[in-house]
Length: 274
Image (cartoon, rainbow, N blue to C red):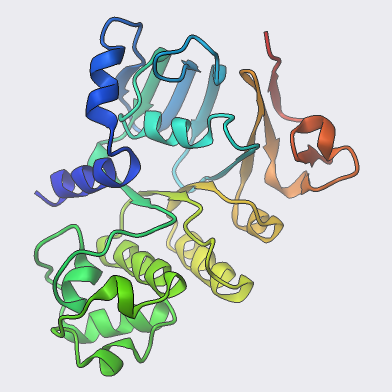
């Protein structure tokens, strides 16, 4: 049930309008999903709903266990659409996505969902209950740099208006705590650290990397590069490039020619527009 709840939560957060869009896409070619030992995309092409414009053309890549993929590119180039396709919430297009069981995935959005209920329920979401005791949950709060939160609000079973009480940065750290509670194999981060300072961001990414978690991230800060193994740069009009993260650079002089970021060296794989 935890896996089902996790997938439903991901659907609610990533694409609230998914159901209506899927109806409109039913007559179009669809991306095929197949089970696999690890995540792999095979000639995947994405189109926007009700349009034949190409967002991403024939993308082929493999994300092995323990890899960390950073997705970059200008607004509207298909970054979030690609995350939705990986999650099974975006179907218009073609190609094949091989994926582990969906219960292995966990999604961290820019604006975390906070339900009504206790601090405990926020931390163990989307599960209704957890085998972790109070001491373990308090330790997790400490690991995500919220060491005094439980004391501040009146304990793990205190009920508050969490969206009003917590800053966006605190909400994002609490969401990272959910990852530590559930220990998923793959975490998808859609600008999930946008409200954090560089120190908190680096620490939380490092925590996931230490745990061997596979990461797929959208982020815009150069500092996150060191927490990733590869970069998928979406250039617009379907074009894309894959780079080794260790040689990729943001904001080079020729960045304008490549949509806001620029590679430092020859990419590992390229697909041109057209």
